[in-house]
Structures are given as structure tokens and as C-alpha cells.
Length: 599
Image (cartoon, rainbow, N blue to C red):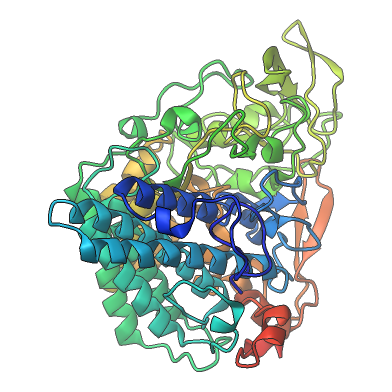
């Protein structure tokens, strides 16, 4: 645990090694600039356990993650290396040992900043204190973020709030009940809220809305665990009263984020323009929300920046989601076939008739509602064209940092000549796709950056997410409320969808389904779905009961690609609800207990 040396930028196994490339301690921690530099290091190290959360989208039912390219960052990026089920919808929770270690690395880096800044605060005059307290607040926010992910995955975890200088300092720490860890997270986030500015003038530094949004999310998860239960976490006793109180407190924090800081959705939530089917010169505003043009926008409340070209700190969204046609990218992540039917019609605001998977030969390309007929995708939620691509949809090719023009995507056709409307094209090269769809979301449509040199600021919490979490919290506490319904409709409007029909908000269950629907399409690819499924205890609802027939994942041709949860024993379900405490950590610490399903 906490096996990184936080005074340098490379991997170490011993915390007590002296840094040989940094300023001596006595010459540092003298000025606000010193403290700010250390805080930036904490941001950088913490970023790598959050900015690849799109890989965790594979734990849900709508995104396939077949692996990942070796990351360029050697400090924490390998937390995600290797597939072997780590990103599948089942049998994944024993494969995240590195994430456990690196989250504690982030905790210790934050502790290092907090401890030293607190010494500076004690000696500072009243003029200097606010800036130093802001730095401590940001570090506490990051520490709270790390601990939140730890409890969301592992439940009870060890807690320490001081810098670890030697492994013996933590080698005997027991796991602390989740409620106590949650209270410590809340204290960190409350301090951060009190000390951070209303708005940061520097892109990448957090402000009050980030602390409030994260505090609300922690309380929402706490409410969910108490409402739906977490039987796999030994000693945890859910309470309906606690759930209601936590839902109410979460809603209060989300309400402040929404009302007190002048935040609005990207481009004021307007849908923007959309091109005709098969064209991509005009894309909706939702697409650009996931391009660097949105960096610093008010919708992105809690996020991590990336350096881009030549920094060694670029994001690799294009490399992992793009095709060979876009800077030789590798398409490790793509949508599953089943997501397409979740996009509703702009004409009715409700679901279209289900798509019919069928081969493109014969009448396949012309049959009404055929999954390979491009016309089947007409009049859909604007977020569909912004997020995924189906047969005959165009995207910009990119090679050697230059545009190579438009390429159509055609499933099972790689770099092949094709004529569309009398124009000659060559199809894209989507290596590894097995569903009939690829992502457009996150994949740049302009030249100038390599596949691993992205400078997009990865969002951990967006305003649209806050709208939906607020609706969920108020609905759980008091049923559908007018202001919550209006916020869900704002999220829908960016997709050019009409407001929810009255039947969708008639009662708690109906409104919850509408909220879940919006979370699926609004947050696709952002790493949220797996966490939602677990906190709602929805695995059985999605995949069927233990020992059942399971559920096939299909492709647009009607092929049966993979069947999940076939004859799966109840114990595997239990293991999918809570992650395994890493055996290596238990070998080093005799006081670490194991989660019950993993005994």
C-alpha cells in the first residue's frame, strides 16, 4: 500500500529512499509558489487513477473494452494494463490490485501536501493564510476523491491522514468501517468547500462547485448503499432512515451547485446543428463537449487536465477509441450493439421500434428498422450521432497529423473501396470491432495531435451528471419534483428530445427509469455505468438471476458474439458487487481482512 515515492516522478518500492533529483527539504516549503508546485504534482499523480475511467465502462452492458494500449505514463498508467476480464461485465473484481495501490499512492501524495502546507499555515500571517488554505483544500478534495473510489470498490478500507515515510507506518493498519471513512471524506470536502474560491481563474484547479458536487455524490452513494443494501460488505447494516437523510443531504449539495454559481450546460445546453445521415461536417454541440474546445467550460465541474504534444502527459482517448484510420489508433473500446436502441426519437421523445439485426445482403440495407439500414437511424436523439457511428457514417481520417478527408465506417469492411451517392471512398479500418458500431465521442475530427497527445480535460463530474444525480436524490427522498423533472428535460433538450411525457414522471419508479435512461445515453463511455449498476444492485435485473441462461451480446448482422452470466453461480454475482482486497497487501499486512465473497 502506498508504494510510490511522492517526492519524485518515477516508481519506487521503498518509501524511505531519499530523493536525489529534488531540492533539499530545507530549501523547499518556504513560499506559496513552493506549495503550489507540490499541489500540481498531487494533481498530476492523482489524475492517472481517474482519467482512464472510460475503460471501466466495460463493466456495464453497453460498451466493450477488449484491452488497452500500454500507457505512456509509467507511474500509475499501468493500473489498467492487461485485459483478462478486467473490463468485462463479470469476473472483474479480482483484477484491480494495482488500482488499490495507486489510489493509496494518491492519498499519500495529498497527505504530503496537506501536512507541509498546514505547517506553513500555522506560521503565516493573515494575508498569506487564505491562499495556503486554498491549496490545502484542493489537496483534501483530491484525497477525498481517492478515498471515495476506494470505498466504492472495496467497502471498508484502511485510513491514514498523515504522510507515510516508511512502509512500517501503515503495514498493520486494519480496515476501517465504511461509515467512518465516509465521514472523513465528508470532512475533507467540507473543508475544501469552505476554503476554495467560487470560481477558479486557473484551468485545472478546483473551486467550490467541485467540492459540493463530490460531497453530494458521496452522500448519494451512501444513500444508495443504505437503500439497496450491500450484503457482500461484512458488518454493513443498511438503514432506510439513513438512506433518506443521505438522499436529502445529497440533494441539498447538488441544489447549491445548480443554483449558486451561475453554471450552465455547455453552449447553454443548445442542441446545435446536425448533419444529414451519413454526413459529418456539422455535428451537434454534445460532440464538442468532449473536445478540447470545452476545456475550462463551466459544465466540467471536477476534471483533470492533460498537457498534449511533447509533455508526456497527453490523454490517449483517440488511441483507445479511434480506428486505424485516425492516426493508426487501436480501437480498444467500442459501443455494443444494444446501445443503439436506447437512443429515443426526436419526434416522439420515446423509444423507436427495436432495430432488427440482419446481414447487409439482400434486403438488409433497405428493410425498415434493419440495423444495417442507415435510414433506421433517422430522427434520433442528437447525442446518438455525436456518440456512435453506424454503417455509412463518416469521420475524418488523420495521418501524420494531417487530415486525409472523410472515410465511411462499414462494419466488417476494412480499408475497402466503396461508392456512396456516386462518390468514391475507402472505408475506415476499425480494428477489433465486433458489434457493428464504433465511438465518435472523444475521437478528434481535426488534425495536429498524435493519437497519444490529446489535451482534452477529462471530466470526473459534469453539470449534466449533477442534474441527473439531483433528480435521483430528490426522487428517492420525496418522489418526482417539478424542478428535478425540468433539469432532466434540460439534459434531454441537448439531444433535441421533447420533454418527458407525464407517464414517465407519474411515480418514483417511472421517474427513476427515466433518470436511468438519461444516465445511460448522456454518460456513455465516461465510466459511470458500472458504478451505477453496483450501487443500485442491478446486476440481476440486467443479466438475469444466478444459474440462469445469461444474455447474449449481438452484432448488427444478428451474430451472437458473447453470452454473459450463463449458469453463473450466486457467488460470482456477489464477487461482482465488491472488489477483492489485494492478496499482496494482505501478505504484507496481517490485519487486513478479506471481503466475504473472496474468502
